[in-house]
Length: 205
Length: 205
DNA sequence: GCACGATGTCAACAGACGTTGGCCAACAGC
DNA sequence: GCTGTTGGCCAACGTCTGTTGACATCGTGC
Image: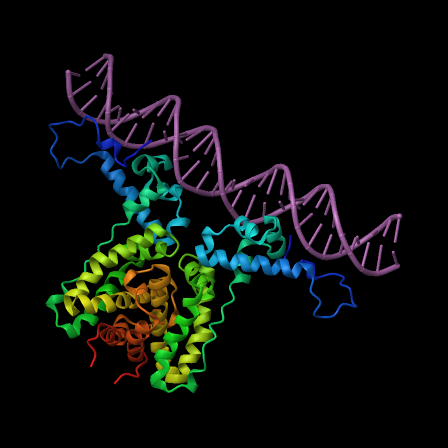
């Protein structure tokens, strides 16, 4: 039983090592995480197999279990999402919607198969743990950022629907691939969606 | 090999039967479909098992295969989605956004575990066939309805993003259950989201 | 040299899955 | 009566899954 996911870090360890010493296991661990994120993002939690992750990381499937204990705990470890939201208080309130939409488009356009938010989204629809993580991301990263712009009370009523619009964009453009949405250029998306989000934020004329 | 999903309807059939005669198999078939829709809606394609569907329909798992040939074909058969969109040309253009939002809220509020659109949505994120069906629903039901209001060229640029907003609402309120979105009353959702969709449609001031 | 922990490989387990084919009970037509 | 179709149950197959435990190898400390 591996009650914790890092048994190999416990026990006697050479004391004279530098704190930044890199163990060989660190690279393996990182390789597993990278392969896991890729598969979870592309296919969601249920359809990715530990065997496929191990094959991508060029190791034995049992090593995945040794390092992370369980598929579910591996998923937990892979589920680190930092939206890297810009400081919205530094932009004019009227520009916030456009900045937001542009920010997410920039994240996604590069490599949609390697974005943590899309990973969570793809799994959260059928996986409770992922859904909880999505709620946490919203509560910790999105809601406060919007509250700083429109105030806490307004954010309580409007921030959720702003997220709904941004997630709806991710959903239709990258997951469902609705042709009418994928056909738009990033500029067109910003031009059409920013005014709508401005309305949702209550900044409209 | 059951090349078609309705072998028991082929072959010799009593000629003196009324055309509306109900075979015993019709009820079984319907029971399977009902149980299948329930499971597909609640858990998506991958996580629902034929065995669970059969248990709910009170029959043997092998019967599901006999009636539908394959899990995938059963999914296809269950995937009938009629959005029952109202005639948008009968309402004032300015009211279209509110009517739309209200329409979908009415559909979903009753029993979110029994709505075909949520079924497609939950599966389409990881299942190509379901995603294709989602695109088809959009192309056949949503896009034309919006084109009738704002014209075909405008719809080509804007209808997709309107769908994104409505699907984003379904996603955050019923699938992810973002607290800030589930806390809103239907009236509040309409009040906040309708102006945004009006902007997206290009009907804004 | 030796010992020992850290890494890794291999083979297998037990359970679940979709799917198959054989057998059985009705029931209608002859 | 017999025959054939319809509707259903049962046991099993083969495959894939997450997971386990036994065994080899590397590398460092003594």
